[in-house]
Length: 284
Ligand SMILES: [Zn+2]
Image (cartoon, rainbow, N blue to C red; front, side, top):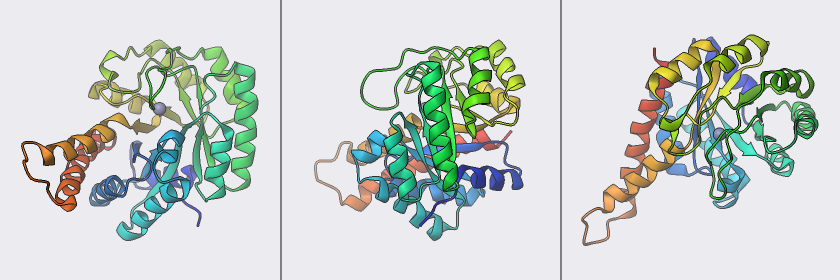
């Protein structure tokens, strides 16, 4: 069972006149998060990537569940979504995703020296294209952290290196580090707008991807989309909404509620967060 590729999601979004495509973290394919997100997407007729990192997938129910959870929701709601493997720094995780029919992946070689990042990204692109999948790749280091563990030291991309990376590695989507930060520190972002202008001018046809969007001011999100960022990632905002929704259902209770009650509260909180994301990314 193959999922939609990034190419298909971007094309479908373009044909709907969608300004940019949200990429929403679904915590390894948590069915309550996936369902809440898909209901809001259907109501707004918006295409989206539903993403997760290898660490989230492997510490939850595995790669097949991640794919199945999203594919079931796609059929149930008739919604334009695809599973997207986010920040895979090990090509083996990408091969596992491709093997179960995931057709949108990100190779994150940002910790590698430039030449190695180019070589590994290029080999991932070739394997992915052989099965019709699209590849996003990162250059520079986006600060903060997506998963438990060490936070990356932020290092913005260098324009000359970006040009060489795009020419030699040829990813389908490009995630350059421009000064945004992963996690709950979006307010600390310091975007290098001169760098953004250079990247926009030099990228050719390659769509740009914005990471570390949680907490970024709306005016920055809008300006980056206006400049050509096509895929806009939200992870922390959705994860936090889900857990806050669970906590809200338990607050002040002396008895234990039914699971349905707690999960409904979490789904409502996720739906509210999705509405805020759609407002930021697809409405101007
Ligand atoms: Zn990211």
